[in-house]
Length: 250
Image 1: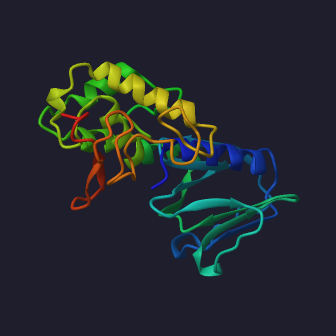
Image 2: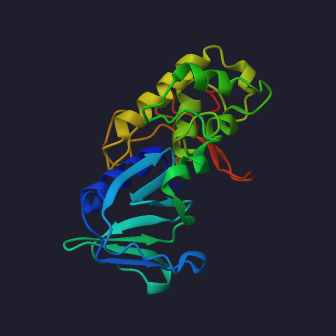
């Protein structure tokens, strides 16, 4: 699933293609909103909130969430037509929403109600490390990785960052949140990780952007830990796959 940094970049890409321009075509391929036609109106604003995207056009707001496989594509789309859920065109650009997990057209005046449940946005103006830390520790018995993934705690962390943060703090994904000794440092580091990757196509949590050197544990099952050499273990039995070093993470 795309994480907060990916969604942030997607918003920037849509902003460059659409913002301030008049729509020459608006084709919404979702039955509930099939009659919506914003042709002739100007795209006023594109913004991201955690993993959510909003394209504000006049009194309307196009809300989307990429979920597992979604993407916004600028220009030519190289996928079957049935995968395209919306097409927005201007005189010189085209944006297509492909395999979007959520697509709805909301009233602009109340569009933020759709994300009112989210915690502070790691890449947003509302970011507060202290609020996120309090949210993180609200249930001390909860597994650490699960809490990190809860968008009500802080908005933007996905499975890659959750696993990498567990490694950085030396805790296994299933460790109870109550074992975290400095929750404020956790939320601060979470924001630093996403912020450092917000403009990068090739994400890195190690500081090394070379292929195969960019993450600590995620996707590295059976490979040697970068710190101690112990083979990385994994658990694919839950809702989200987890990775950890049995030596470096207690």
